[in-house]
Length: 125
Image (cartoon, rainbow, N blue to C red; front, side):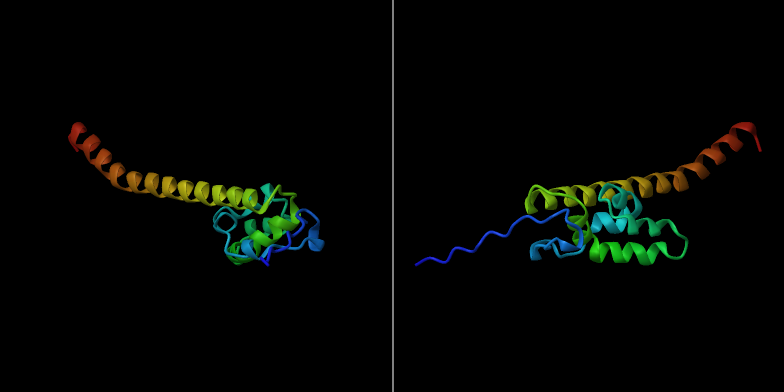
């Protein structure tokens, strides 16, 4: 006789009454990196404390740890797979934004002095 596990009912979006599937209890990079924006998208209003000075970093870490659980409880999801896809997209977008910001900052730090020197040389300073 083969053992077939019982399917767990999807209780997402039911607040604290939601049963959070064990496979989504993990670190949430999207919540950590895009904390307040992610919080609005996931209806996790406590995450808005991330905009408060000195509290923001603590809240970002808390969101990284508890983000999946809170997102599951605060929004209705079609399935665990859909939930994972959406959270993975948030993580990728956050990573690309950070890479873009650091890339622009690096190019600005490197190119600005070169452009200033070239301008001064053209004017004969």
